[in-house]
Length: 384
Image (cartoon, rainbow, N blue to C red; front, side, top):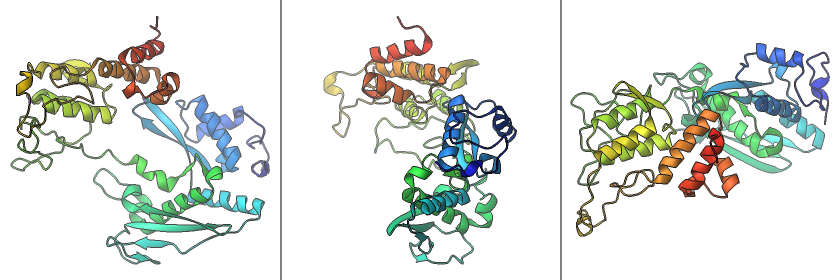
């Protein structure tokens, strides 16, 4: 391995053979904005990445950025570089290998799908395309503007995304193309241009949590004729999504339709909000537990089997998060899964699904309640 990043010398020089950060290096990293929430594994991975890419964190060629992760319950740190860092790595690899390297002209696409080799319009392009040439091979990538633009609370483009949108989306396309051309050298590190969107405010709540003005029809409303058992119109649309878990709980508390609660359970499950704490009648409850209880509260005795078909001839057997029939509520495995995910969040286990499948040889959703409870016991220390 090249020792280029050690040429500057001094106490901050990263040696190719070192396995941990020195006290001097750790102090400077902390002063650069890395909080005490960073884990030893994140710091170790960052050191390995600096050695592999030969980018110097003390010259701001590469750095760790912390973003709050709801599942982990803390800041999670991700390595980032600028597009210039990607270019440095690419040129260094080419110089060492003796291969050829270059680019085709950058192209920008308008909203009608027409590609241009220069972007002169005042509005942002819809996309940019960059093609990297490595040793005669073409590596093309397209970046969509809407997927990478950095915005504020009012949807206004921020920073360079507001001033130079064509250049920013082109950098994202270039990063994608360079990562295709140099997968080993650039794996595990993303550019600041690509990651700017990670700081965007959460979007407005989806389905029935959209704000509705007085006298205005709910744009997400589904007619009961088209979908029997859907919303009955008694649920009140909430304003915004600053507290999505609480919003879901509020809607569940106002509806008298059990199918609506089932849909809320599915949404909360998909957004990993089941373990969030919500306030219901002055009590603090977990959202998942509250929705399960609310669903059972609204459950009605099942009609005779020969009368359980709807107008469309389909048997009326709604499910909760792929669980049993509506009259039964969530299955035992569903409840066990909720308890497992709550225990994993409390234990700080961020790769629960991966660990479960490695231990039991199948995904959580395909496991039985006994297996799920067994892993919950391991996490909580209550295993027999």
